[in-house]
Each structure stands twice: as C-alpha cells, then as structure tokens.
Length: 319
Image 1: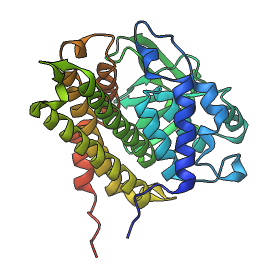
Image 2: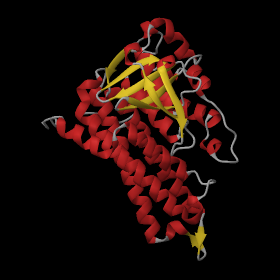
Image 3: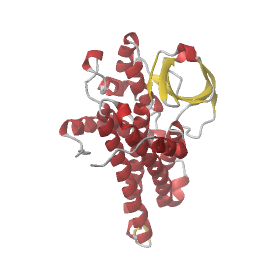
Image 4: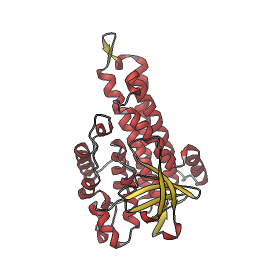
C-alpha cells in the first residue's frame, strides 16, 4: 500500500519553506499596491535547488517527492517559473555551473517549444534556459536564445518569443520531472484559491450574516475543497510512483497533470465568483492564480495533450 502522507522530515522541510516564502514571497507582492521582490537568492540559499540532488553533487540527497512538495508551495505562492526551471537545470547542468545555481548566483528560465520557436518566461537575469520540448526537457545557455518580449496573459511573468539554437544543447532528460513539478504547482494553486475563497466567505457579510452561511456558496467552497484534495493526492501518488526514476510513473504523472490543471483553473474561477465584484479587481489575488494556472497549463500542452498522454500509457494493474 502506498502511503500518500507526509513524514516528519518532509513536514519540517515544508514548514521551513512556508516560513521562508511568507517572508520573502507573499502573494500580496503582486498587487498594484504591493512591493515587488525577487525571492530567488533567498530560496536558493535556503537549499531549495539542491533538495533532489545527490550529496555527491552538493545536494541534500532527497528525491522527487520532496521536490514535488516544494513545487506545491511554489504554486501556492505564485513563484516565477524560473524556480521550476532552476530545479530542472540543477539536474542537467555541468559541474562548473551547478554551484552557481545552488547558491542563487545563477538561475534558469523556463521555455516551451512551439514548433521552431520557443516561448520563454522570465529570461532576464537568467544564464540558462530549460526548454520543455515534447517528451523531453533540454538545457542550453541563455545566450543561445534570440527573441523579443511579447504581451503575456500573466503580467507577473515576462514572456519572450524567439528561437534557441538546438545545437547548443548542454543536456536533456525525459519531461516527466518537469510535468510533475508543474502539476504540483497547479495543485498548489487549487489549494490556495480554495483557502482564499473560504477565508473570504467567512468574513464577507450579506443580509446580516457571512456569505459562507448560504447554501450556494457552501457548495462552491465544498467542491473547491474536493478538487484541491484530489489534485494534491494524485500529485503525491505520482511522486510516490516515480520515486527516484521519474519515467516509471508516467501514467500517474499524466493523471496528476490533468487532475491538477482542471482543479487549478476551476478553483481559480470559483474563487473569483465567491469574491463577487471585488474578484475582478486588481486588489483581489484570485485573478493572479487564474492567469498562472493558464500559463502552467500551456507548459503541459493543455488538457487535450494531458488526455493523450494518459491514453498512450498503459494503466497500472491493480492487485
């Protein structure tokens, strides 16, 4: 029987990460009245990018399950896609670059291959670029990227479209780890938007009582909770299935990607609805999560691509 719970060591790690992000990356930083901050150096110094690396390479010697838990918190706090990219780059980078990634002196940008072009996110300040290209992720020096800034749906992320010289590839790996980290971030979004809606429903009053007392709002919040729980459980199942060999859990990762993407998008939409008129304003955080859910969904190829991958994999036999 697979245990989907979090052990004591993992719980302590997550608590430390949550405290770090609460101080250095509160979601309120994205509001018009917020103070822009770059938490990358702080989370690198905390040890974020070495969690899944073997000790021989300067990491903590943990595994993909711990990387998944951190990616979940990255989704909850709307960290830049460069955090996932740097996590991936740490597994692929040559030794002379790895040390700088682990200390935060260097970072990677995340990109999606779309035919011959790539759509890159937060390239400025990056020294490497991790490209999600079909069934693999490959790493290159950011100097190999040639592109221009484009208008993006998620204004908290700077998008650029251009090309990367594929001949400059440094290393590559199957895209399973990338998809698991993205799915975990989407599950984090599903949980964060559920918590956001429930908290608002407790304090917003109409007709002399909190709106959470009304059945229509109760049902929305309950559905959000179920979706968030399902996404989180499936992501944990995928991490447990792949363990130290991500390609072994391909089916579960595909299921996690689809479940988390649906949950993140729907919960973010419902969070806006629960907030009513204020949900559409810049001062409400719900719309930030909706935009990020759509951005991360593109990195997975959308729901159709997720379904196709699941159908392509043979479902594991149940004993």
